[in-house]
Image 1: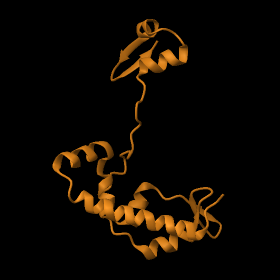
Image 2: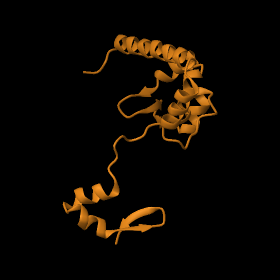
Image 3: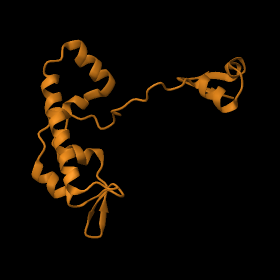
Image 4: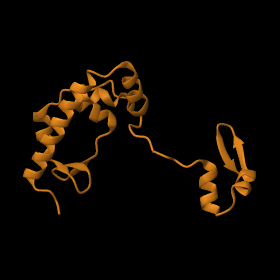
Length: 138
């Protein structure tokens, strides 16, 4: 069932409380914790420091189409780029070409090949060749 307006408001308030709490904790992180966070998530922590223009987001929320994940202004559908979002958020330091999440426990090429072909590890290993920085099969 789709969330009602009041449910969304409560959820947004919970996110804001979590963000403020995380911001306070982030200020107390030691260098090792900061480096570990940056290694895993890049400059995502910078977003915790961004001051959001509430009026802008209230205005944009009126035009957001959650079904298709884009903005609809009259009969025109718009999907902002990462660069446009960083401009709207006024956070130019965000690295637009950086992925902010990493897959956990990604199987190796060997394991994926074994899974696809349903062959033994020895068989798959004999077919894998190094080509530049990548592994492939001939």
